Amino acid sequence: MGDQLVFVYKSLKKNNMFLYLARKDAFADVPSGLLDAFGAPKFVLMFALSKKCTLVKVTHEELSKALTEKGYFLRIDIEDEEENLLNQERKRLGLPPLEKFPMK
Image (cartoon, rainbow, N blue to C red; front, top):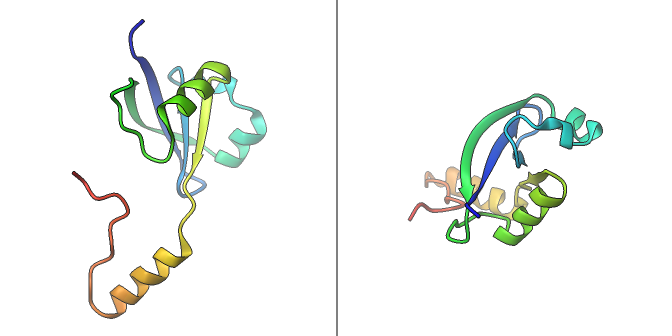
């Protein structure tokens, strides 16, 4: 069996909220209450989920299981208040903010 395609949408209503779908535009799998809270989804990315794929904030197994069982996965990135305070202080000192996920 080949790699599973994953379709990623971001919320225009809530910052840092992403919806991963097993099929493009398959919102029928997502509960209506969740879609109401998510708001209008904006397609941002499609990728092939493979064991070689490095994911951020979710494991390959978690994502694969959710997509297989439910057809979707919701990711909410919660801002780290301590990190925000550190970057506020860096800004006050004229320093650039720290990057969350440095590019390799």
